[in-house]
Image 1 (cartoon, rainbow, N blue to C red):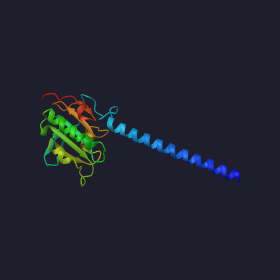
Image 2 (cartoon, rainbow, N blue to C red; image 1 turned 180 degrees about the vertical axis):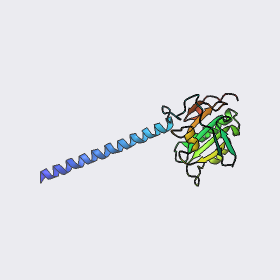
Image 3 (tube, rainbow, N blue to C red; image 1 turned 135 degrees about the vertical axis):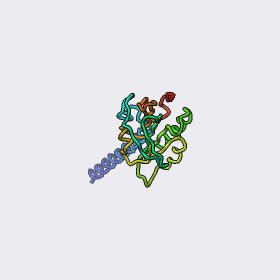
Image 4 (spheres, helix red, strand yellow; image 1 turned 30 degrees about the vertical axis):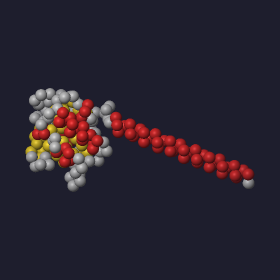
Length: 178
């Protein structure tokens, strides 16, 4: 009988140790996730387009039923996904970047990817500084710019060539004069 009691105590101690280790792992994963969210995707490519490359020409309707052509003539194109957890956090820095650099609203295109019947709640905020477009995931513009993650920001020269891209608009250089 004493052997059975010792075995049950050992199993109980092992289970308790396993439980404590599991809680420790979960805590570290949460810390890791928070660090990745704050850091963004700095080491990952934003688009498949290299600096100097020009995306395919496009003509797409905006949410205001205006025909937006490009890439020539656009200075900044932003991609947000309605399923992206960090996208709402980047909207204020995007609007700040546009306003701080004096980029006219007609020279900025903000593309929100997701279901058309459930537009992102920050769409109205984007409309104050950019022409906006709703597209399904992997839509026409996301394919044209070869976007690999969200949010993504592409600064363009007057001819539509990529000058810089990134996951944080605050890290983009100042745009070149048109």
